[in-house]
Length: 481
Image 1: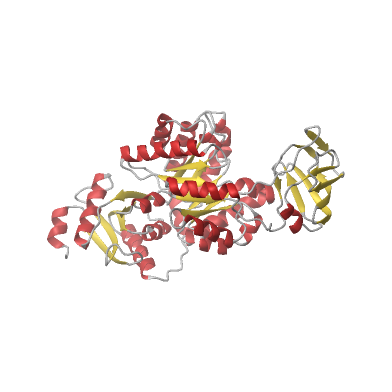
Image 2 (image 1 turned 30 degrees about the vertical axis):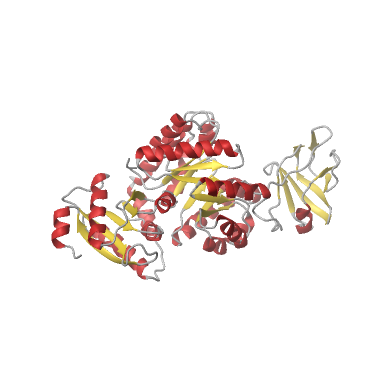
């Protein structure tokens, strides 16, 4: 099954999308990656979804990526004697460690780490930022605040602390258990929440032990500030605009999104733009014009993937949401302006042989009648480098390592094909030509570009570029052993 677009679609599974028929319909509508949200559902439910995805993968012969999204530590207030209280602007309110039920003047905030990090002048946000308070005085077990934006505060509402780096690990005890479960299950990507510093990513990587790639969710101001260091130790990035829009001024999120996308692309690491992309489709079969524009903007920016959350997990129209995203992507990518924008944003420092090889492959494809760039890769790095170039022809990644191909399902423009182990370059070219023909990217009369590394089956050895015919008779007649 060939996708007629380059940007990838991530669909979250949930109550609306847990049976075989719906997940198969989501895949056929255009989903390339399925997200398992570890904040919701039992391990048994997630294992059942995983099994269905792998069944569809076997039936279609196409690698499918599975992303497990870890919940991260959740900061919440305690409970109130009346269930809720109304906070008025200008009123005084205290957070403390006293477990007694709250009232109109105070409530328990059972996170001593927050008090350890707070300083006068810091902000506390409650209920997705709907209530805002300014810290006037604080200590090891309390924070006296002034309400700057009032509203109804109720039991166990979430708390955000945007102004400080909290001395909290990105992985809670639940996350550690979920990480081990997901890795044993065989997911391809782990999305890490609450990232504040590169050490958070390195901790998750040490626990994953190579069983899954690590994708860092950028959702806190501290992560934005430390982005270059976090990107350097991550395998991929998610622009998690939900919490970013709570902890930062909402008008600052669009330029931050652009910066994060460009940074990840320059590093040749996949980047997902996520949160509320087609939010109205939770209850409506049609998106708003603004939502369509939002999806289109992410694609014009060069994002590797766009993501559906509640739209596909709990909404009434999960398949329609994927179809809408697919249609928007095809429309954008057929726009001549899209190519102009993508090519204008191609700013890459090339420092290795592989960098030069993939740049040459893209230039040859653009200057001549080449129908595909075919990459043989053990680790997937070469295909990622080609994708960074954003060529105007399809990218075919070939590998005997299924896990590598599954991870590449998140990368812009990459069509993944499982091959046998190959020892000779001539057979690599033959396999590439067969894949290009089989999946409809080329015919016998067309030409392709093949990149590979010799010796074969060794990571990081990309050193060959070959323009080859798709006619196997010509390959055997002209190619060296």
